[in-house]
Image (cartoon, rainbow, N blue to C red):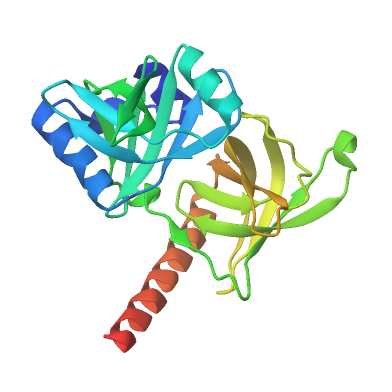
Length: 253
């Protein structure tokens, strides 16, 4: 588990580790019952598969997962030396891993089986609480591209924001998907007037095929050494988004 958590950029992951078998089963069943999508990353590779939990078999110490629609990806999953998983449950980030997966049958269909994880990570801290940013009038981050990528300062729309970083949409696949790559001097002009300038580090990459069959890439980026006054701008903007969302929910109730 440690290698997986370190890949996620957490230095003090022990603080969030859940080792209670009963609690792990309850969390995984909650993810299954709410049909939460799970990002599945094969160790040593950059592409991500989306799956879901079909069943948690406590008697057999097994978790049954949906297969990928890509047969080549299924082959790599079955031969992988390790697999990492990330999802959310009630706005709490859940991370776990498996040493490998095997084929199985579930309700007359093909599925994947992994061992029930001995531990998992449950992140509840405020800095990992992500807020989706507006789609109609998106906030953008301007990233100075290095010479090998054109050397221009290029805007990218944000998908979400937290006090730990942002997710951006790289619709034209300009940034690549190199995990760990740093982009210094990035600027975010927040709607409340605050400007954030920081280094962004690519932490994860997810390629998605849209309904029009075009490829889109979502990049999870971590703030590196963000100054405290600029972090305060981010916190204030997240609070504003949360307040606006709660107002919309109240208006619909």
